[in-house]
Picture 1 (cartoon, rainbow, N blue to C red):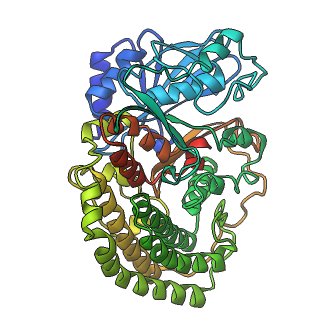
Picture 2 (cartoon, helix red, strand yellow):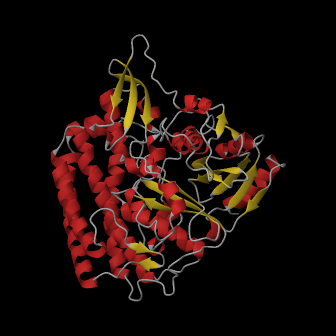
Picture 3 (cartoon, rainbow, N blue to C red):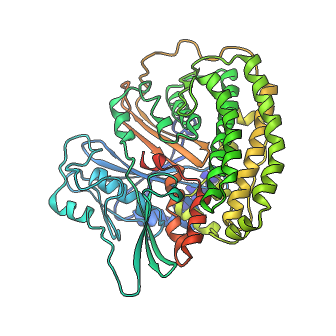
Length: 527
């Protein structure tokens, strides 16, 4: 019996007054849909928590007649994505918080509050997360809805309070160990951290609002500006979601080229992290070697895409252009051969370095039980021993035709996160090699794809495994050539929000090591 069928039976037995309906997964990207009310939302969420579902995302859609909160849940055991919706009065939108059940919801609810004006009863801290007190209206509402004075006071109420025997330190926003324009307000007792509060928004560019103002094709360059080290994977998330929404079939050749180039980009992104992580701990030499290897990948991808960083190579129905097979394949094979030899050098230089080992082993341990509470994903999740990877769980592109393993850790510490990413690079090389062997001939783009896409009315959620984890795109279509709503579920956001949990009570030096192990991308979080 499929998991979604068992969930339906248990749900109807336990919550008889709430309807649960099956959805066509191939068309909408979720298996079940539930319409909640404010009075039973907590019971519904508690139902999924007891069955060890993780929180995928929480966001809002303004349908003007009402606001709709959308909650997505899934499991690490097998794919069973469930959508829960809650309709609210747009004049006075109030909903109960679920942060008491899923701590990650606290951060999502803050985002919804500042962008839509939804008040979450019981939320401990509805202050600004991405915006600032110069914003005089809720930016993702369809109509101009001003921010009332009392809400401005609430949103702008974050002010660290000095206490006896403690002080505050700003980690960032201009600091190498924050890997970008991120600020973390640390409350300190000597060298030990009492609490850590991430402050975002320094790079906020309102990509989701831009999506509402651009056609699907005009939005193509935007995803690369979110996750710039892994731009092709975000590019793929966008085009695949639109293709599923429009029913566009992609040629096999394009699927394989997408897979190969994405894995090259994954390695390039991991190498950026590999150089930066030891640098956080004082070891600058690995940075030079990692960037030397990374430059070889950028040369290959530049030849194909015309860019070295913010790639926009994939198109609806295939690719912008075909590869020069002789030049691309020979260059890629040379890189694979070179990279395999480099792992021995990295083992001696980094993995076996006694200082590096002592700085990260048994530090920043994340328990499996907390992974689902925050909806963390990617290598961060796999380091705890959970073998969850969207490429395996819900194959896309050519991943379903290529055999590869999923590396996992043991205890989820900084060392496990390091080892998982190192192993992932080796596995990416295997995927690239097999992809090249199986690369079929044929067209690189589907025929007769309209220049102006007008998808049918409805919604869809689609996810890929980007460098840092589950990257999901949710689109609401109103049959126009512009998305009515486009939501980006980015892995760095949910991964980073575990940091306050892991940083509490540890030395600041250890916290910096933990933050370096995350491999966060700040523009991805700020969107």
